[in-house]
Length: 532
Image (tube, rainbow, N blue to C red; front, side, top):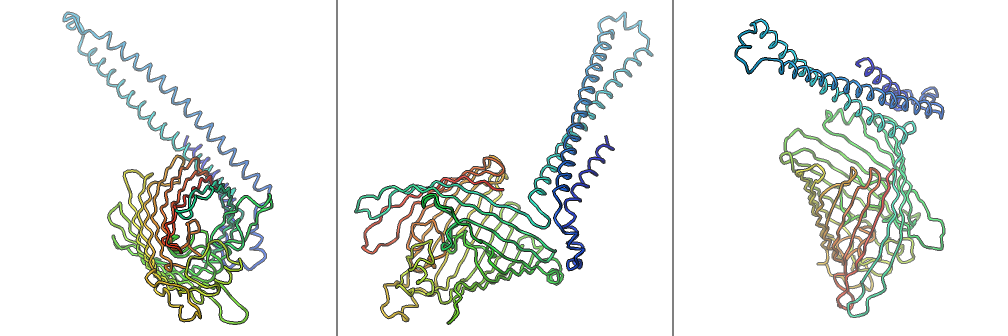
């Protein structure tokens, strides 16, 4: 049994090593990158090699199944032997004289001793059989676990080609709208909108220090805050665009300088967020463009675990003549551990939007879509400048079950420059500098990771008119600012790669131009998401 198990492990190791040689060689021999011979070593495996690897994996699983069958047969044989031993013991006990004193006197002491020894021997044999059964069950369980691990490893290898790893998702959404409009007028007709989303990601690690990748996503080119594509426009084809294209540099010298208790990372291109935020300030589908630097420190303190500093410089409107527009800022992140069940994340950030007025002409002519502006503005200028202080506190609780984690977070944003651009506008619009605060309170329980997982959540959102730059925050709100919204969410992980979701948003504007109360707009979202 031991030989078969060792052979099984050696076969599995050989297959994994064959599939992983290019990535391993790159990590261990970074100096060979520049030579043609090294490039040949890193070449993607041929179709024949991949087919041979798949064949060996199939043979490996079949061999494991055969071993399981043999072990089950051994288990049945041992159970049969145990039954025979029990029958023998019963026969011995039945023959032992227990009721007649005369018979007891006639039986010699040596014979009594022999019967006792036989009974003790039988008990030892039964204990040995039970122990053997336990060991066999453990071996069968280990073989099954190895087979599952081999299958997962095979799935992971099928998703990789050399240094590149592929992933993505497809989402189908049905989205009806009910209500909305002035409460004094008849309710508008309901709206029923089908939508799809496609995302495809390619990521690669070229060495221990260098990584990069790109993503393609559906959605309108002029909408930076949504990758949804509405099923309309007379069956015309739907666009797919570059959503990310980036490189990351994590130098080893920085890790050495920090004694492996932290790292420095430089990210450039069009990338995912390098800092923590909620959709109160920036939508999840937005991918910023520019450069970001991250410096992290890890601590062995039982309470204070991590301090991370993030900086970013993000141009959003480069012009050939005249000054460019850009956003720069930073964030201080802290991580705390309170006992074994409570984690706290504290985040303080600042977003400095320079020359944001360039956004208004783009919104007016349709070059920038996604949200209908609710900030006070003219056709060419905002009444406010935007320097946004962003404060976030997040608590994560480990509950009675690993399937039911609890998360509570609160986000407060304040535009420190509300209405400060009025002096630069010839005919300024109405702007109240006190309308500068925004709030996001969220609670969430459960998770969507393994099949049959459930997740439920509620979010309260209140954004005053000048609190955030409405061109880039949460795209599913009734309005990007001057809005009050309640959001309910439920998710069910039907299969390993399939998730079902339901979201309901109930929102209205805080104030209207006529001071008339607005009817609540009810927006529902029913989603089916397949991840690959």
